[in-house]
Length: 217
Image (cartoon, rainbow, N blue to C red):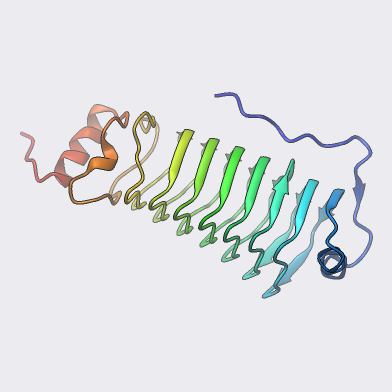
């Protein structure tokens, strides 16, 4: 699947002032934050909601237990970052790339993510209920015990990723190719309607049959 890559300008510059002060000033003045490199910022337990990031490179950053609700990220890259337990509820991501990053327990409920590439990332225990995925690919990533209930998955690929114990309650997997993934223990409704039309291999089919109470001999 072809994903639209982030567009970053050639004249992008390093941020040369305190990140939190810089962002809060932009929020107060209702301004966009654009065309900068944010490098090696370490913050925790800070509320930076309702911020608009455009054409930003996040590199080696650590945001822990931070709140970024209702924020937008357009044409952004995240490389070797840690957003563990951050709250991005009702946020918007478009034409972004997330690579080699840790998003353990991140909250993305009610968010929209489109034209997104996620590569070699840890999204274990992430909360992504009622999320809208459109043209998204997860490459070599882990989403173990992630929640994706009542979500929309359109043109989504999971490539060599793990979904062990992930919940897809009321999220339709029709057309989703899971053959290269680990899907042991995934959670769905009692009637298993979420799995109709999902693409699996013979081994995975036998594992899923156990959910139905079938005994294969």
